[in-house]
Image 1: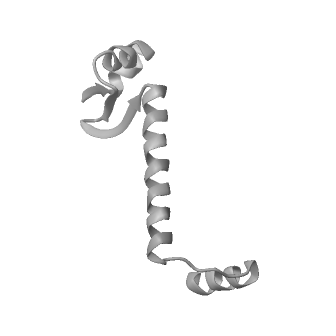
Image 2: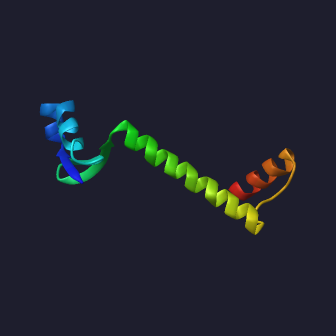
Image 3: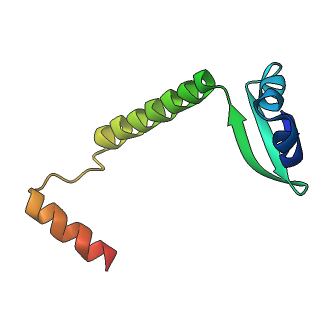
Length: 86
């Protein structure tokens, strides 16, 4: 993964990001030598977001198939959630 420094961003601006993303889909931004942020092309972001949603959907289907769900009224749900939060 490419690494950009905060100073690169300060001096070169968006051109530094474009250069880093020309070779790889993501780039790390380091601040004072520590990795702090990741930047990516919007298409890569959408792809990762879709993967995340697909994984959540698969997990939900698995929970339903295994019987790990509760069927209850809205009032009972709110009561249960409040009780577990306390």
